[in-house]
Length: 150
Image 1: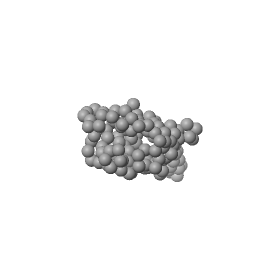
Image 2 (image 1 turned 120 degrees about the vertical axis):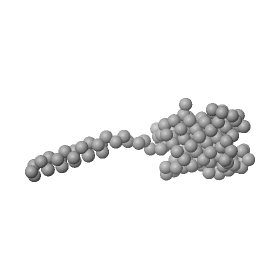
Image 3 (image 1 turned 180 degrees about the horizontal axis):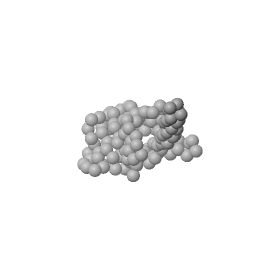
């Protein structure tokens, strides 16, 4: 009787260890977000001003780009706003929920060269970012960007 219990426990332990070892490792956010992103939908405050699939009151968002590169630990960003202004600098992720663009040149209006976003959600093809400070170019609104990676 003791041998069958021992065999059962050893089998369960082996299966548990095998199952635990087979879990897919999730890459860090800094690796998953490092892509070229384009606007899918944009809200100024609570108002949708751009939708890739529908109407738009701010058509320039079709040219909006956020390109985050991470090459050998060097994190560079190219950020193109709705009006075509393009900025370059560096980026980093703080914790699991904050994307920070720093050293942006030329400096975006009223930013001091830094723009911060909350990362609301992130998967392989979509990220939702909310700007932490009001954008002077959009009338002082807090903007939410749903971006896709084509």
